[in-house]
Image 1: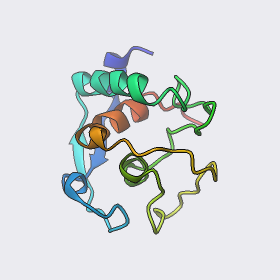
Image 2: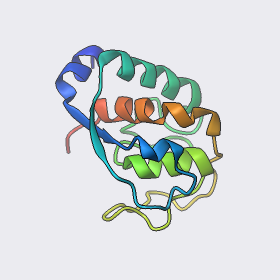
Image 3: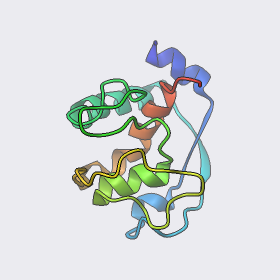
Image 4: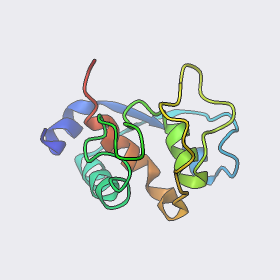
Length: 128
């Protein structure tokens, strides 16, 4: 799928500006709309490939060797897992973890880039 085409068609994404400065991922998150640009989605793809495919699949829709598919993870879950290696407590309504392993290592250097990684993952999400 052409990432730039997906970005143009993708529409609105949601993320919280306050989420990035939040120290406790379990706190409620105020969600505000954000439009993903093709450049943001491409940056997210590059970061996903460089940091995530060691455990998650190259295709975010498919299970990886250690980590699950990530396309259904809400932003709050992705933020918590990247920042702490753990799921947020409480979990977002309706979200059920796909694996119970505790293998995820925190990657706090990606804090500012979580929204673009999430935007990329959402841009390639296959409809069920």
